[in-house]
Image (cartoon, rainbow, N blue to C red; front, top):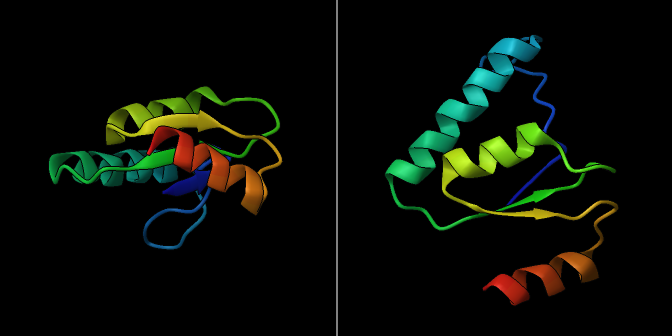
Length: 82
């Protein structure tokens, strides 16, 4: 399970930079898919983000927009798609 607001802002090297951070996130997502790791991406942004949806697609993950997620809401959502 991955929780994100879809806005990458720190690179894999730990430096700031949205463009590189986004590319790093997509590279990591592609590795998850290549290894057939089953996953769910929960978009925690107040409004669903295209960047989070794209990350889920790259991962081969189920995409769940869940603004203002709390433990109960996440548990229900995960059980529903499990």
